[in-house]
Image (cartoon, rainbow, N blue to C red; front, top):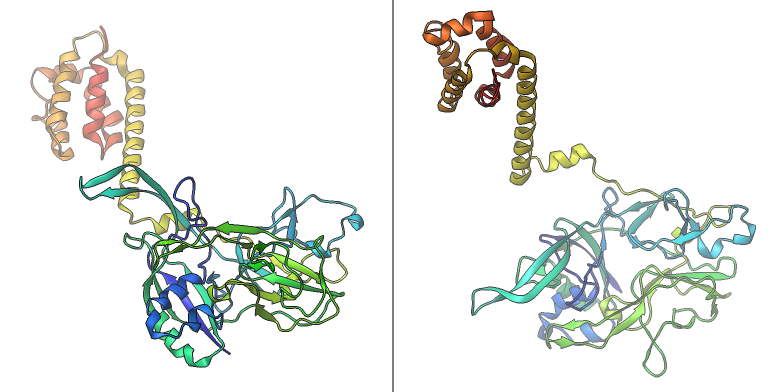
Length: 472
């Protein structure tokens, strides 16, 4: 058997809906199902033997998100057997369900199940992957009327461009490997709305490690972790949520349902080639954990079980290390989950510094703050010096000052038009004597005009408007 390893990088946003329906809320998957990669190879269907796509001898695994700083290890969905106390976070305390005994715990915390997120487990710590998504409203296009169709609005949640994912392709027959690799490497489109701006990805060869398991029986149990989605059919061909130990790849044993933690899924796949829906897929969600009571060792560290293995369904890991507990503890998880690294406020500002919209908003905010400061100085000046300008007819004086300020955009020219010796409006002519009295001109110049340098025009216009309202 040959294992091909690849890295898939999103060049644009990618839509991978959890459900096939177009009505109601729709959320995106946080991983890339293996059938997307099978579809890429199937574009050259006639160049391959049918067993590449239908026999299960070639298995296109799911692509899991890359964890920054741990690119050399493929991440896994957080196990459903990991629980944390209510009102706390998984990073503070984490227990393994099948190893925890509530009767021997004096604190008896109320535990909640970990359900979301992918982690890389390394050196007794679990490092989280960050899969960011974006929501957008889209409309169908009416080609005849050349506008958006009425009542055809869609809400799409998509994985953000720039995210990277790791996946494997297992080939039982080595002769298929080279052709499959050549078909996958390069730029392709996956997901929905591929004819629009969505779905462009680039696939390249990569080298990474996958989480390992163990064949050994631990305390008369074998834990089976669902690294991929699992679909089992009973003897009548009906999907079932209650597989047997043999269905899980074990020689014998019995599943302990009291210690097993399962989550389920259901969706209707869309066949693009035939332009119709296939049979509903009903199965067990990845991250689920089976606890099987047996004395026989596991056949391997990992394997594929169940149906639809060619599409990546059925991958399991036996006795994975991240389901172990600390010695002499009541089910305390061996691995400590690390918190997600959220970008700081300064980092967010640096990343968006060149965005035109944010630059405009910052400019408007600065203008509003400047206007507020000017109005505060105007109100302070009016309150403090209004008595100095009452008793004489000053309304016309302030009206003329306002007209001069409205006509002069240049601040230096405005200063000269008002205060220049022998040529300024306040330093010569009939207005000079009124402004010399009680040093009114000096008060306006020193106590207001100089304090508003840089915004003199706006400040003088606002002050003149307020001072003209002062009654005798």
